[in-house]
Length: 203
Length: 99
Ligand SMILES: [Zn+2]
Image (spheres, each protein chain N blue to C red):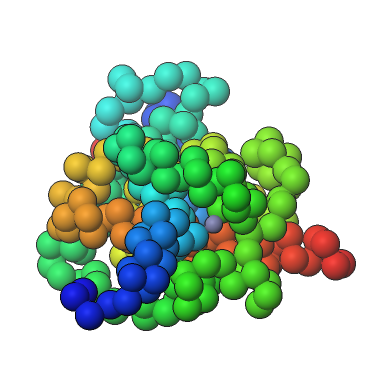
């Protein structure tokens, strides 16, 4: 912090502090969900603001402010995941093979009698997105996935990264990736069905 | 293989033609990642015709894909907030960077 207090009144200061007020929580949640580490999430938000200050030219006007900041944050998160994978800190936790396959019987059909068969959800995407309680369940279910599986799945479905890019970032083969995505989908849909639709039906 | 009875062989052959739900679930997931070959597409179609569970599964995956693509963080009051200490540190860092 060199020469603090000399820039009082300069416009950029006001901008950045307003950003912090208006988008700080949102960016933090975004990063926390993807890194599961509050210290890392804080750092990434800070890096995002600093990068944003440097590249004001990419700014699309006040209405697109959050989108622009999130776009910067996305890059920071991907860099972070890549770094962690390279340092082998994100170990391939031996996700118990039973975890997702437990939904199938010995004939490898859905265990209908034990309630594992997919139910009729009877909603569309718009209806789901408008529900706050659904969002909370979705985020809880994502955070229940094993870390590496969750990273692969979120990069694919939420960040819309190509398989090639994800394999590079996570240092895995395409076949690994497909298996991970398959498991993630099985577990996620199951988790949502029990925790959200389950309570909706009977509650 | 040689000492299997003909009936056993036939039943094995038939079950190899009938994919399991687990196989179909994997193919449905893969179809989000890459175009399936025509044999696999036929396998899935034929299975869908007789299995409502896998049909629902495929619909749920499409729905989740759309929801996730459009997802923005939960903003309800009980969702996590940027801690006060971090907010202060960030403010300092931002000010420092502007000088
Ligand atoms: Zn089936």
